[in-house]
Image 1: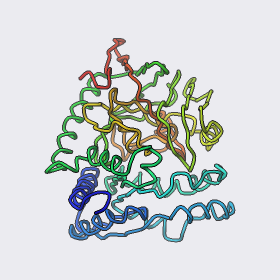
Image 2: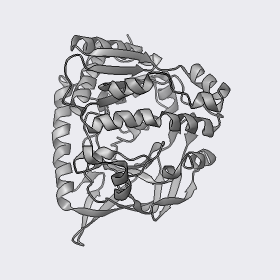
Image 3: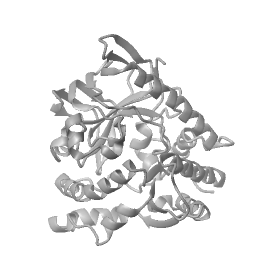
Image 4: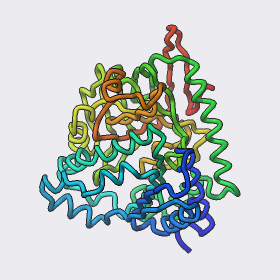
Length: 400
């Protein structure tokens, strides 16, 4: 028997299709869906592929590079190779209708020691392809979802047994429920009510206070709160992309993170008028500073998010951003992302959101998007546009 039982795998695939169709309700027969799958997630990838074919999608299935392939590329390539995109990629990514990514890493540290600049060059070169999909998503032509398959490497880095790690995934994604999709529908409904409530408050700024931080973000004009949209499995967060120019104060990430082969711990950012002017980390300090110097937007805020502990059953560090940014535990979590913003948090007609309008509204632009997570007990106070103050989040849950 595998890490997950056959029944759990079938239910996981079912939830991923729920996520894909919820993220983009307009799918039609014979739409093209790209499935990207790490080698160790093949067991789940094959079931997802079968279900998509049975549902009459045209499936393009691609395995992701192994750790050796990826490390060799970054180590031995020159700048011209790192900026290369294959012939046809622009046409393909501009035409694909859906994307499912199965994250199942065999290594989290294989890129350790690789010059961060090399990774940044690749991220910058591939950003236009990502922008194509974002633009199509804004037009309702593209939808995506992703998940994590448990691996020995993830469990080891999280200091859990593989069985414990898999149990966290099963609990978080409701794979032991008789009907996981029905459970997700309920979470979707409950989160929609919270998002409507937040919109009704007409919030100007959000102040987040804990033992280690005091951060104020400006929500910005024409913003809406998103979350539990099918895009991530699991997803319990409710988030927006704030006006980066109104970020001030100190943010602290008490959960560690793995990124680009590097282990980072205790990231502390001090913002002034939208920019992180002081950047430090207890571990990985140099790496953090390099990533946040990738481009101008990398040291500015692209996302602000809160997770309600009543929704999420995740209560352990998972060494995986997808799960860690949805941590429930005793106090839920707040996380921010430095770097690129989500244009679908725009509250107007998204097809009319031009590059110039994004800039004017304070949507951040970057080749980076890096989530940094705080699970401390915290209070979030909203300053409303009428000048009134309201506590919207405390003891790990929304005050809705």
